[in-house]
Image (cartoon, rainbow, N blue to C red):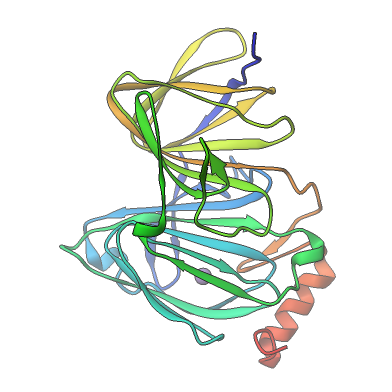
Amino acid sequence: MTATRHLAGISPGMPATDGAGVQLTRMVGTPELDMVDPFLMLDRIDRDDPESYIAGFPNHPHRGFETVTIMLEGLMRHRDSVGNDGLLRPGDIQWMTAGRGIIHSELPEMIDGRLKGFQLWVNLPAEKKMMSPGYQDIPAADIETAEFDGGRARVIAGDYLKVHGAAQAQIPIRLLDVLLDPGAEWRIDVPTGNDLFMCVYEGSVTGTDQDGGCHAVSSPAVALFGGEGDVIVTAGDGGAEILYCEGRPIAEPVEKYGPFVMNTREELQQALDDFNAGTLATA
Ligand code: MN
């Protein structure tokens, strides 16, 4: 009999404001749920009042990790210090490796007033924090879908059911955008030693805790799992949409200050000094 992981926690996230006043829900990276190594942060936007997001995220720096932007509705225009300029459309993914430094802007544009999507921060190990910045713009059409009984998954990164993820990640992670039919049971094999979370962003699922108790995870919420083996969840009556994030923990010290994520306070100070000197993105 295959071992299964148990539902170990449910976190609803918390309201936050970032950039030039963008109202969002921070699902990971909160006092309650600091990180799920190697994932540092997950922000969710789901708004239909443009004044709450239209000012976007004007020019700002990053160093030491990767940002993954997952657009579901609306548009996001981005420009960066490396010379990239693009427009994310619904279903598109932007995978930005900050490495030693990038300065960019992320500015929403409206479709029918709606903006919906995620930004995920994926940590880099010490040996890659100062790598050259990288950037992948992945149109929705390039993201393959894996079909299974009771649902399907867009494979953004990593491999799932013989489908290769469209994004090239710097560390081994698996990122899936999953749609479950009402009542469907979904079982996914998780390699030993990997950690994961699911952000249920539409509908609900149920999972089983260590004592056999059944709990509903209703959107929006993050489900955490413990133990080793497969993960099993069952979609509620309305089905479920899930952002599934799995990776091998980096297990290094994490020092964070705003848009910089390094291993030591000295490296953080260096990032600030480089930014203030105007050399963060030119070194
Ligand atoms: Mn950014």
